[in-house]
Length: 254
Ligand SMILES: [Zn+2]
Image 1 (cartoon, helix red, strand yellow):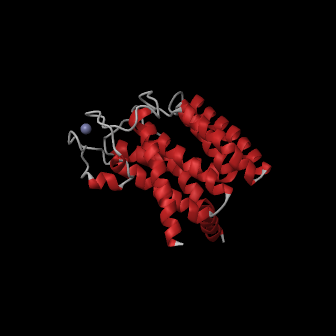
Image 2 (cartoon, protein in one colour):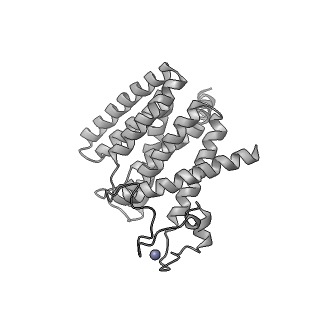
Image 3 (cartoon, helix red, strand yellow):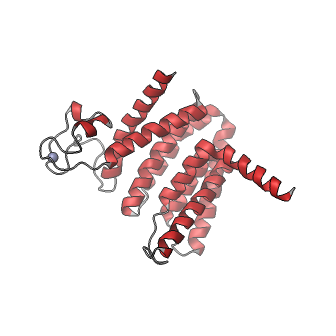
């Protein structure tokens, strides 16, 4: 079993390696396939030994083999994070269609979060592509799952759209689509929890940043990563969180 877990982690790390390519090339509007992976400083192509997830970075001591330019630590970090999340999904959902859908879900969230963090944009085509790729895996679980997913996407997309409209741009169009994406994969219960957690965490961090004088009320805060984090927590621990909350609440009123 430990050997199998290791394989799942490696699979995730390899997917993470491709997610790195998406994170850097989608905002630059570059092709995801051509040219092959290369050093952004000197352009030298990476050989097979430089393309091993996580390990290559440490083997190269974090520098390009040709020009010695520093390689961002984010590359191995994204690979390790993807591997870890693939493994956690596996431990929660096991051998099922849910795991396949959840792997698509976490992959898209990782790409969207890092792009939003860097550029304050959420790539629509990534969310739409994720939903299209997820449709067969939700349908394979059951038509009911797919139906609830689509309903939750529409519902939470509309609620978020209303918030965006009322707040006059405090919430971006990308966040509206991200909310629909969360609803689609998580369904009505966990999707709602994901948004709630995202609002709580994003709001708290926003207040802390303002108190620390790092941001003012007028500054842009990338909200996508907090919604994504809410989505991951709901995916992996959602029902535990709901149960804990209900137990706590009942204890209070009894
Ligand atoms: Zn180089």
